[in-house]
Length: 333
Length: 279
Image (cartoon, chains in turn brown, blue):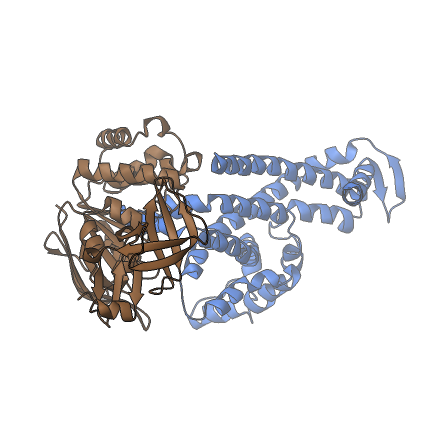
């Protein structure tokens, strides 16, 4: 079981309120991702759940039991840290065995569990090595192994992939997702990378300035962002925002449109602009368009097969049914 | 390019060493006839067969051993304490480090006259305040007193090195251990102490080198009486009090050998702990 409920949780550091009163429910077995720009309070929220920080007010319940005052070890949660936080003087085996040793489990039982976890994570050949002799990905797996053996009711990940190179990150992303499917345990994952959030999450919690902006499945957030912040944060490249008379003509203060919802047409169309830059990714080409008359720059997705030159004039047609309309407060209308 | 430095260093070390070796094979009594010619290994034999040789070696090792134990144990505790955030941290740290800047002679005299004097010393007043008979520190507890004085001098050094080591410990490791269910004692035993092992070996190594040659603290307090005659002090007595330079020089050579034996052991230990970190 791993049902976590936050009620009116706040956290102050001195006079600064880094977490404003918030409520959140994390369902059993769900993969929840906290995402937001740096300083938005997502890591603090995770540390509050872990018990590494004390609540200023509010309460945290784990599996229906009040846990706000419990010591971290008593909450039944396991955490994987950004720096992995492996114990450098212990070998891999001892690192993974450490939490079991701390609860006073007998040696045979520890051995069985450590070897099983090592098998799951492909660490069998490295059990005798010290953390310094491992690659980044292997260290990451040891940290996960140390979390798995405790059989926690939920796993907490604090930006676990940010120290890995891009190629390894994609691999570990898949591994963690597979692990979640196999264990079916609640996982809470903090990241600033919206691609990680989109690809891994069952549910995403978007945070900004200590406030939850929106909670939903990745596609819900992508298709129906509740406000300008979520609209701009989710999706890569960013959504285009258009204000002014064209937006008013659509009956909104500002209008958002994603790059893939603007098509390039051969003949005269609604908008016209000049290609400032073309980023070719092979499968797609992203064009940065200037002088369109509606926004300073527009990002448009084009077919990767076509080629565009700098300074070339193009006609653009927005897909009217895919517009996101926002009012003055930046809320979806 | 390194030649000037090497030559300077060699001269610095070799000149005194060769003079010591030269005199150790001579019968040289400045006030009783001066240079009386070569005597082979006579001085070496006389120095070790003297009744005060082995006691002085024991005394040296006991002082070094106890001071090391006290400074390391209390150094770790003090470092843990100073690592805690508290009001006036900067001033407290400076105060803790202060004894290290007091010259050994001065600190010896201060301890002798201000603290340990059986009539006017602060400790004597303290004892009387509780209705007890004041202790004659330097005669009744001569070894303990010397160890106390030297430990007081070296504790700041140990604390400083260990404090920087504690501060270099990754906080996430402690948090991970906390989540893994390790309480304060276990976090200290399994995470902090292993992390400090290298700093502790370095403290032991450096202090041993200096502690083997402590002199001023003994000279100004007991003057080698009451069983506080270390090897260094014995050599001093042979040369200056007995005016026997040859015998003293032979003692000096023994001291060099002893220091090197200790150094070799320590280097091996340090080397091992450094290797262990690398691998």
